[in-house]
Image 1 (cartoon, rainbow, N blue to C red):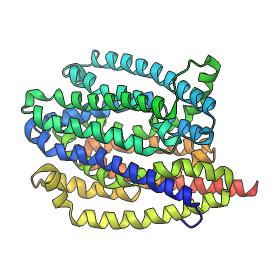
Image 2 (image 1 turned 60 degrees about the horizontal axis):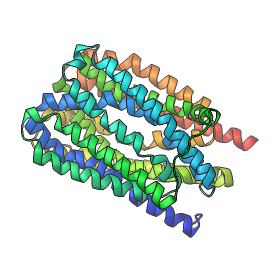
Image 3 (image 1 turned 180 degrees about the vertical axis):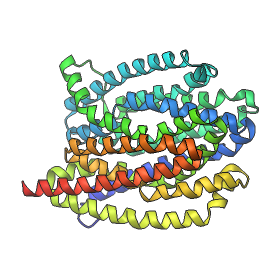
Image 4 (image 1 turned 90 degrees about the vertical axis):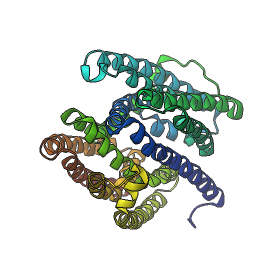
Length: 420
């Protein structure tokens, strides 16, 4: 940190703390409700909610379209230029609105075309409310301005209120529809409040942009959107495959183990999100400092993930009891396997961001192509023969190879740039 200016360091520290609190809320609040929901709804209906959430996640990716990276970078670079900032904000919101309508149309087609979805159609549409909230909340603006505290305040308040509502109003299995309803309402209200803050605090308002301008931002986000879609192909899709090949009970077991792992490994996301706009600026200002900081962050990740893994494995049964409310050997076994994901989790974001910042989208897409192909070769077969445990083992192998490929191409890109 001695290479950072005091002002930059304070900004990074403030943003990191804000995003850490937000990340804790994103994972801890659902974990608080998890034992209660499993008890009230039963593991099968809990699995149904997990399956619906995984389905709707695709539409969240489509609507976001990668702007949390591309638009964040643009706003970070041009944040002193109000006219340019308004152009970026307005173009992004226009594109996201069209993608939101497209997503809703696709969901409607899917839900009423397949019995697997139409049987509980209301769950899927209520869960889709979270996508509406995501559309309304331009996270990229606050990240680009490096004012992450606003994201934290809005999300923390809304999520807390509607988490409490679950304990108050969800009393029996027939109340299952209230769970996605409350979370969606929280997301929508946070989104509306964020738009108000952008107008009041930053004096930024929506202006219609030309088709040419909107097209430029759409093209700029294409590769990042593909990359995020590809990531979902070997993360979210795996849970869907498990649900299609097995049953909601196994999906429930898997979802509980996954939530615990993400709650632990997710502590690295705030750091990656905080560093992204900083690294984007440093890449333009001082390439050597960019590389140095990348290496130091990687070393930090190696040490901390190893410590977290050992601690988590030691307390695996206690973690299951804390979240599930009882000792469950099946979940403990799945979690013990899944915890190895901690070792690779932070590197996916860090190294992917590095390739995007260095404008090495060809390398990045090559890695994603290999990863998705490998995932679809291994996971369906693993699920067919070994169900949830097979899925986890195959997924871990895929993620380890994914990170190794990213590491190889990041180093290749660095060497190439140094020779220029």
